[in-house]
Image (cartoon, rainbow, N blue to C red; front, side):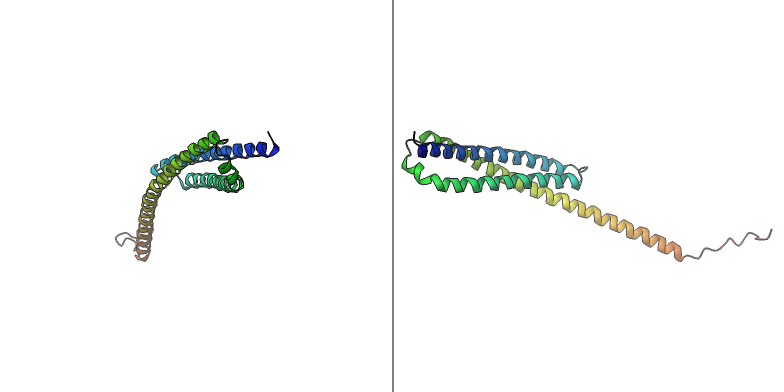
Length: 164
């Protein structure tokens, strides 16, 4: 095996590993979407839990972008050689095709979860806004009550003799 063939075999292995990592990260994103759905449906869940979940997902999405960038750069480098020696890399190509199918399936699943979570978030935030409006109305009522009570002139009882 020549150095060029050995390098090519290493590149193909790296491409496969990149796709495998992408599958793993997409599965993790799917799990985080499940956690996010629980947070959005739990009335006791606070904004900190939601924010932590968002940050974990942002980190995972960043990993996906890095994997995609690396994959594209390497694939562009070996694409012609893979097409030229298609028979030699047939098994590797089939494995990568299967991984790409899995990535696509997971991508669709994650997209659906994101849409569902978006709807849950809209409902949750609408509910929070409604609660905030109720609190503001209650605060206004209490303030008005105290202002009204403060305007009343309290008169000492007139039936009692204040002399001692």
